Length: 123
Length: 230
Image (cartoon, rainbow over all chains, first blue to last red; front, side, top):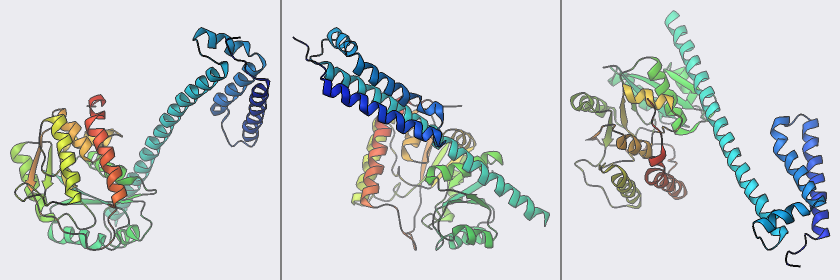
């Protein structure tokens, strides 16, 4: 057979990893340490991994479509791509937070400087 | 012309009073504001005790964020020009007026207090960096600055507003270069600078390398994609 198999071991490994990751995420949601909307990426990743482990025909089909030698390689490739995209979005998010913090800190400091000046003038 | 002297200060307890007192006593014609950038030492306390005009940032934002706070203040108060003035005593206040005169007579947007208009650049590793940045700016803008890394810069009203509004306008050579490429006019006059008397410069070899890399990438590559506001 031309396309090598997604081995049962690897499928098990993927399923176990996904389930553990899912429990981990849920743990933090229950403790309210993360906003639910921010966990969507991880939940979807877990579900997707379980899905392709249970139905390896899916990565098979796609691997054949783009003529990748092994479905496992195809799974790796897609996962790396998804992680890169996600990391860029995180960079964006951090930048946005940084800009907001800068704005807030400056606003607080300028406002209190003005209050100080007003007090000085009152004296 | 109403001019504000912005003095960003980070851990400058040993220098701040000398620098600000000198300004208050000998140059009362200029308004000033100290921006304490979340210092961990006694900078803020000293400023309060002495009754300085102070913007006290509750957390450290870095030079760009601190200086920008000063420019926002200048913008809010309607100043015609604002000058970036180091709290460590390197910048000398006798050169503020000549810089203002230069801005008014030439009608430029930015005046840089340069160490090397008439003086020759010494040969050192640090100046090698300065040459590299000047070269990168020459490549992108076609214009030459003698002292691109000088921190003593005077900005007019239009620049104050632009700097106050945009998160990517840092008081660094890459922004100056970008503005020059986009039609801002810049002039340099000769100034002298003092050695820092107390405290520690952040310019160690590792930081210098980081700085050069950032400036190089920003000046040569990223400028072409920046979008100008206002």
